[in-house]
Length: 550
Image 1 (cartoon, helix red, strand yellow):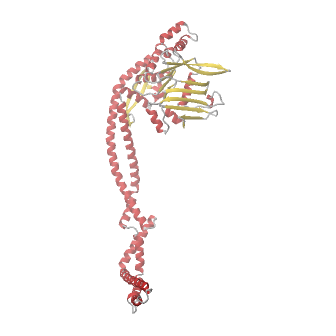
Image 2 (cartoon, rainbow, N blue to C red):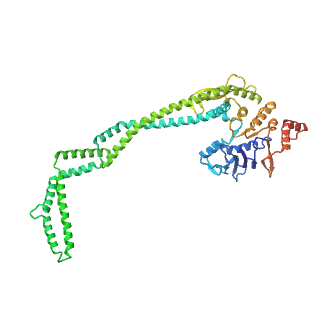
Image 3 (tube, rainbow, N blue to C red):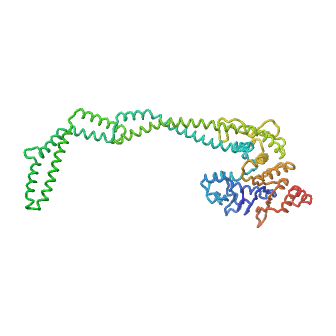
């Protein structure tokens, strides 16, 4: 609901504040007084473009600010959250136009683009102006109207949730199929590489260790001779070093009682003796492990050659990298196999969901088909009342090629305005005034069933008078029981239905014309309607007529 609209320095408005009430707000005034200028300022709030030519004072900026009560507008609050904007119970939207023509937009003091502004404010205000195609050009709005009259809201909500799940599942399948296709393109080559590494079956550090073993085998005789010589010097020569050391140790032990200082030396000598005995044993063990097996040497050489060939092929440097590649290829090939299982599972889920949404869509379609004839008749009857006696509107429901967010139907509102026998989409067939009256008629019939933003009608009664104008006023009054409605009118029959009446007028001060706005009391309301009937100075008859209309 619009709480307040502040306009400053816009066309012929120096400063103006508009505070509409909850139900039917009527704006009247003489031609050129500034009624449409107020709507133009409202258009800026809705994201329309502007330039410096709209500034009354070229030295100052133009500011248009609107305050909206959005406590019950859940769709708007969700849209705010989606844009990461602050949420307040009262949302303040502001447009500023600088003298150089640059424009800025703000939502709760946060700058936004015009695109974002238009998207958000479309959930706050529905502005019906002459020559606009309005929502009747959009299949989604037409379907919303039919669904509102068919009582489809709950079923449609369930369907949309399931359809959203279905579309997400379809995207998952597409992504997995793309991944699978990419994997399959490389699968044969990767399988070949994997098989080659699997057959080689290298373990960590194997190539490096085999290379070390090869070096030992190549110098086995020299290594054995060196080990044997060392062992003999220690333990197996004519005067083994270990035996000589043992003699020295025994001699020292013999003087420890005479020279206490010799005891530590004797102990150290004993430790050296034991260490050399261990060394001699280990030399013997090492000697026994040195192999002269040519077959083993050949086997190791083959492993090293194979290892280096694979390392070079894959641009690697050590065995660990080769084993890591082996594991990686195994995982990728396993992923390819897993993808097939995942796709199979997702396809089953898709099939189940598809049956569910088609069943729900079938029910939606049946409800629509059942309620369209009655709604169509009511709508045509209302159109006759509002000055379109020759109009016939037909709602065409057709099956869609595939499920969509609103089911498996497509819808078109067709109009034959003059009994020509030719039906054309409404937005092409109707004039600007007719479009506004058609929208008014539709929304009056769906007022209780549809959640609508603030509705603004600009001269919805253009081209009609008398009874037709009276019926337009009645429809506006009925619609305003459920929604905030703002209407600019020249018809006294419409103005008489106002819950709140605003009057736009011009003032001349210092040779400058400015537009002003005031809210009328009951007496002013009667007098303004009498002026619409009888001119600037209405007669007693006009005043009486005005009271009767009210």
